[in-house]
Length: 612
Image 1: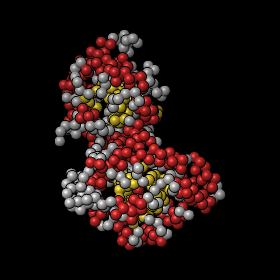
Image 2: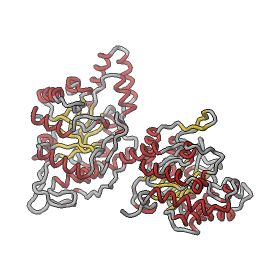
Image 3: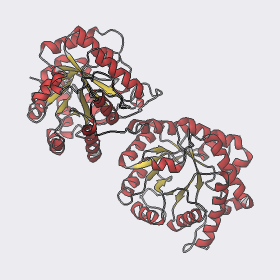
Image 4: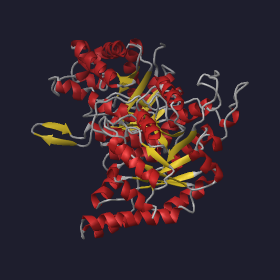
């Protein structure tokens, strides 16, 4: 495997994870603040390397050298100015040994700790010379890039950038730090310093330290609007609290990771952690990055360019399944979502499906490990339903748990067993379920898998090799009309359609006006839309969906109706929830191609009431 470098990571166009705090980890190992942490690369090299190695194990792809304060001005206070180059070189060699070619190593350069002109006595040229000595040491150690971080003064970071550029053409991450007001200590806003750093030639522009994830997210949102350079967001683990004689950072790994995901959705390319963050924080961030960015970017070929090999011909949608035939004819399809059992007894699930078949429902939607929980697999569940009950299934198939070859094997086997309808989703991160230590694969995302299944339908495997008779999958994808970043959702939806999607199922709809506005925007894709409908059974259920289930938007008007009904008792709340769902069904069925109704907690009778 070729060595990972910062240039390669930046050139691949994907999201990558920085490491966390070095000082926090060294402090935890018993080194107090009167110690020169930068000198520990010479005096305690094993401990410094162990910290780097812990971050590599946690999933960090970019390691920062232990040199944040290793400039001659700061080192002078410890009598170490003459060792500037030696300390920086040693720190780099430790990080490179820990990375072992699996992570990029970037030279960390922080402020000098004194004001420069026009606010201080130190000239810009003197500052550039001081930074230059640090750069020389880092280059001697073999860094493959630089990270200038925690600067408040744009003139000072400019001096540091000039010092790098006069000695190297390696890529530079330039990060400013901001206060609670969203500005640097000198009063400069993110939009302003992002423009300046772009003009000065920084390769990546970002914010780190000082504030917690929420403040850094706001800065990221502002910077992406004014620069075409990749953006980095590296917050502290919240604001420090004084506990005894120590400052403690209280933001949990899960909280940090959830904000990392929001930063990525806002446009950040590099995410990591600053003061107070540990390998555990970075591990959670890595898991969340994997949930939104597959490890292998899908090489999606437009459906228009895929041709079946000689002797094979794709089967029209109308001939693949009863579900596909109704969609092809433009008729309204109905389905109810039934969750697989937690154990091995499928009897209750099969009884629920028999009730749906008797009621004339077209298909059963079978979720795949919903909310990252442990349940019977979607494929054996669906096979049991079709064989024992005789009603078609629409299997939800998520990318979280399998690599590319595992998915290919599953899908071919499921087809051989008679399944024909598939809804392809990326899947929830494991942290959302009760098994937070479970790993996520996310080898490819739903766009890549849609393309894979479309190829199978044309008799081709992912490598474009013939497989014999084409598969006959009716290919569906998920879409969220209530997405916070609707432009991003629509962009991904366009990719899914281009990759081969033939119908789409929405997240639960509680706002018909929102759905209508969404349908107007996706009309250009000419793809049938199946609306998700979820009957609420209580106020708690409504609040849970509104606050804890990603991608579900419950308007305040619906919550207010449920609060009022809940005051009259459980039955009144259930009746109101069903009434809301029935209203949704009546309002949306004229605009969509079908409806998918969830059976809350397996209560099929509640789902059937929605159809009236």
